[in-house]
Image (cartoon, rainbow, N blue to C red; front, side):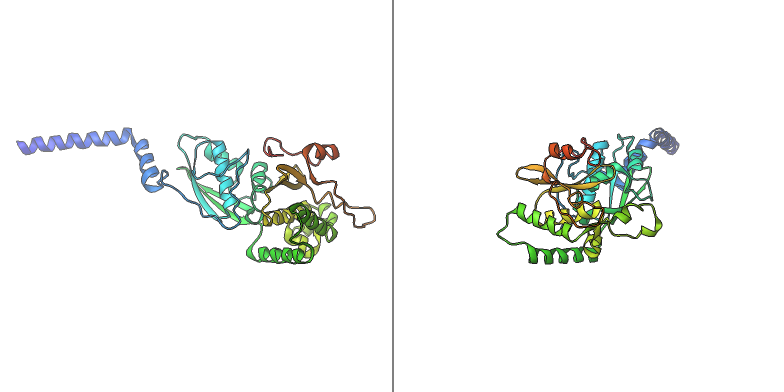
Length: 315
């Protein structure tokens, strides 16, 4: 008799647990996935390389919380990942941030080159050129885990080449007695005097004959003495970082230049426009766009330098 009662009680408890699991299946599954499989609530640390700048800006800031809670937090996570110089990293979407995966898909379409996506390209401008991406892909699942894979613009061989060339330029042109501004001006002038704007490449942007051109990089500028605005702005940023001068690359629709923090304020430096193309192909060096404030910049040009003021609030 006691055995039958025990068996009945066991069956009642068992079926009650089954019903409980069915009713709360989603909550229990989510809890198990969050806390035991993916452990979203554990501390995730990111390893940073020597080129990580760890700078906070008005639009995005460095974060150590890698569970995205909202769109701004998502941007902060992406910025932190890019700034760190890592090649691959993962983070999570918070369960309450329902639009997270959709926002990521908008920012980083899976398995596609994302260089044309404005917000991510602007974030890329804030990091050291050696940590900036050439291609960036994402793998997501329905449980909110996001894996970011990064192919950088510059590999170790290119970095060594650029650093060695800059060292040669410094040895022949820069002295310890120069002020920081004089060093920047001397480097700016050297780059312009030894480089021509690659107008042929600029006029054939969509041609397959030029798809392997390096003119948009610092490597191509130093190696071939031809550059587009990306090459000019990258080489200036690399040198400014070498001097420990805070700077970012700032971009409009079809142009990019440098924003430099010096003399306790942010000033524009556009080496591309200080190296104008002449009808006769002669070399010209000007300083119209050398360390100028935003009012002066807009007096000179408002079309090609019409950047997103909500993003580049420092300017």
